[in-house]
Length: 284
Image (cartoon, rainbow, N blue to C red; front, top):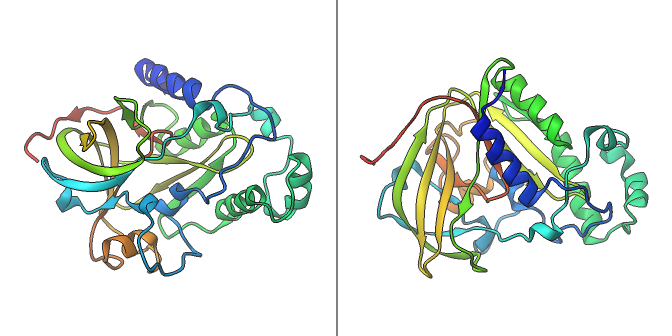
C-alpha cells in the first residue's frame, strides 16, 4: 500500500514548489473566482456575451490529434504568493463551513464583502454543494486528507501515481494559440481522482471522482511564442448528468450527453490514478 516512489518524488516536488511550506494565515486570495471550479460545477453561471479567455480550456475528444491548433488558457501563478498547505491537525482545528463564515473572516482578518471574503464564501458553498449523479467529491484542507480521500476512492492497498501539467519553458503569457505536437501517452485507469486548487487563505483542493468513463492523456503542446508544455488532459465521455448551464457546454456549443468534454489542467492541479501501465498514442 502507498504511493509509488517516483510518484512521491513528483508530488513532493510539486507541493514544495507550489504549496507545501507553511504560510501566513492572511495571504492574499485571488480576486477572481477560481476558474478550476468551473471545470465540473458552475451552478451560478450566467449567460456570456463573449467567452472569457480563462475558460478556454475545453475541447472535444475528436480534436485531440497531432497538428490540431487551439486557443488555451494556462494561468501563471507565483508560488511565493500561493496559499500553502497547513498540517492536518491545524487545518481541522478551525471550522470549514459557510455557517461559520463570520467567525472565519475574523480569524483571517478579512472584511465582509471584500473580494477575498466573497471568494472564500464561494469556495465553502461549492464544497458544500451536492455532487452530480455518479460523483464523489471532497474538499481537502491538507495533504494528508487529500491522500486519505484518494486512497479511499482508488484503493488503500495499491500504489498511486500522480500527474500534473508541466511548463517546460518560462513565460508570462497565459493565453495563446497552442498546437498539439505529440500525444505522449494515454493513461489507462479504471478510476481517477482530480484535485483542483480553489481560493482560500490556506491551500484547499476540490477533489472529485466520477463513475462515468473518463480518459486521461499527457500531450506535448507548442505555443505560438515558442512555449513548450507537457499538459494533462481529462476527457469525460458521458456528460448526460451535467447541468445544462455547465460552462463547458457554452464554450463548446454542445448539450449534456451530446458530446465528450475534454479539458486541460493548470499546472497546480493534480490527477491521481492507480499505478498502471501507460501506452503511447502515436496513432492519434
